[in-house]
Image (tube, rainbow, N blue to C red; front, side, top):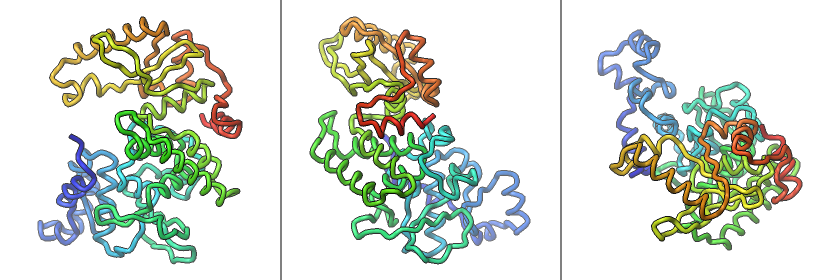
Length: 369
């Protein structure tokens, strides 16, 4: 079972060591420098380190949590963490390997750390301070300027961070759009979906509030992306890969139905990720983990899982009379690559994005690679 953010913070906290702790272990200043050069230590910030082995084994979100813990131990507990830092504390998939680091050039806005090419360094923390506040002067600390409302901050596991709604707004403005969309879908699914039953009233209220935020910030950086996020985010997306796949479908002029029920061979109900009736196909996105991770295999071999998936795929195709198309994360890296995959199945794609969400959103989608 996936560890909670609180559990990961507790575990990682035990692995972080201070400069004083290293000194007690017998490390001299020169010894620390040598260990850093050899990769035996990783400096999180001045005076705080993680063992190199622990760093190598950690996922992006855990590396960033280590940086946040080190920042908290360095003082200034009144910081308000934002952007990627807030997303990490809120359990949003901002570090997902399906999108993080693989979406260069798709950003809807730019911040200083992105221009420096260090955006994906998990040691960089993000905070929000009021306009006019002095710079922190700390390496690996990006301080954004904004005035936050009373309802725009929350406490998460001992950290103060921006609220989910504010965090998604900030991500849309400065991060690559696939990352912002994946995070918004994840949050909506977590909050407004129960076994594919959607609280459409709450979803609609969220969308209205996001559009109101965009209206109040009209003319500002990344506001078009906020409007696009409000219109496109969907609680029926059940994974990051599904979020990015839907984005690519929309860019290809295809507006899919999500999580559509189909009678299965054993009399129960199967669900297809995407049903595209007008284009004559259904789509399924798969990651390799389904066939190789023991937890997902459920005691079966990769061959058994593969065969079961093939039977399911053939059955759905027979029941619906539609072509079945499958793709993996690599196929979604760009619009061109995804369209090439669909074309190989004989599916007609368009260079013009779907206008199902309005002309402005279609124009926004067409500007993304």
